[in-house]
Image (cartoon, rainbow, N blue to C red; front, side, top):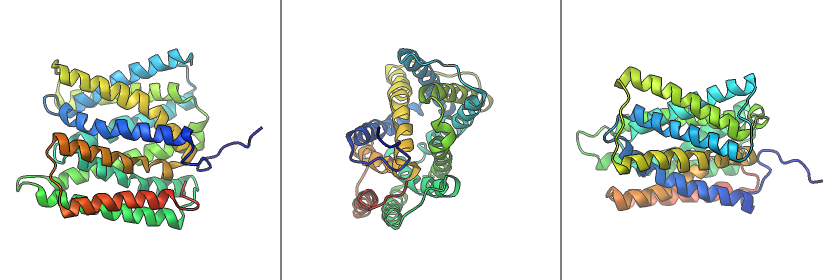
Length: 307
């Protein structure tokens, strides 16, 4: 019988790890552009609500397909409620608002910094070590992201609110990091993944809806095909398919290395932003992208990468 696998013990280049890692990156790299369309005709709070309503229904269907019971313990329900608040309410409420002020690719690039709070929180809460190689990679990637943000600030029109967008994205980043470390912790690993995510999305959608009604008024929805497709794509493909894979990666790789998915995602997002949003490249943007990718390589090639 093989030895039990602990967080950070799995090797990145195993097919069972690299496959989900790349698939999640491809899907999430495209979701940033879809989110941009979602905030045009419907207030962002209601778009978030519809996304995770669809996500909760899809996740419940997945549980039934896998013949997993949706019954969950009180401890599991408490964990799901906290995860729902952090990941499916605070994180996305901030993200959708941030995209009012920044291009989708830049918001995705900023989220590559998720590796830093993830690793620091995992070190402080879960006692997972942070190694020199991980710190070097994170520093290089952070420098690249800083150059990209500087490029965005210089290219923004005089009436633009780039700093507001950065602040909102930073708030989303902190919320997502807390959710990631919570999911990578020992308590979450004892709970069935899909049922817990079903309850987390359902609770998150209910809170999102209550918040949306309070700040935006009665429910609003756009019946045009693009908006409906966007809700379904984000709720089902961008949530039901990806979150179980991603949280499993966090449990296998640890919160630090798992978050490096967020460095590959911006590469895809920036390409799509260039094609569909007219993103204009400069020497700063090219240098920033190169440094971000170099940081990813340095961290993943570290002899004992951060968990």
